Image (cartoon, rainbow, N blue to C red):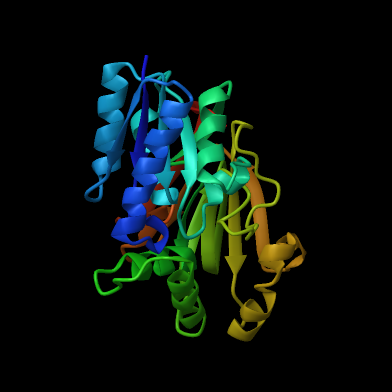
Length: 293
């Protein structure tokens, strides 16, 4: 059985030339490992999902996604509930999933590790029918994801993302949400409501320090806002893993949650914005994806 490597040539703000080099390097590593396989380069949004689905139909033993969390999401969505595992080569702005799984930052090493790894199962999340591997949420992170994804933003990469997030800290207005988990219902004016399968957004920003990607649960995080200056001052806690010391921070594990608002909302799945109505239903899909890392 063959190996399929799917390359996003522009993830992380890469140039077309760098994208071509990614594909060439992937082919070189396959040849050096004496693996039968193919390397495909994405051409548009959704193309990675299509390529991964075709690889599954061909009976590929492994599909490796080279890109950011959005690329990982597309490929993982196609591999979910199948026996075909996902390998990762991180090349995005945050790389939350790859960081959480300890994937090498060196592309050739990441590919070799995926080829040799023994696959294991991890959980997925499901938000109104859209699968996610790392994070989903409403509020500030979804607002930033939508701005980053906007047609008016022609530059990708970490620096662009940080710039958008920094400006949003001073302009974003939180909404009021009703969050139901089990028999408990909580209403809050929250700057974000996050559903975490892993601990971090990416780049070491730990939003859910207790989350585990294979424990059969998701972690709900609600961060209320009482004053913007206080929110801004708490940002360093994301990187020290001490968010739980905030009085405004609430977290709990769950397997099914519902978020409701008075107006239609935008949520994100692994950084990709999605428009929806006034109700968002989130649940865990235990062991739904196999990863080779």
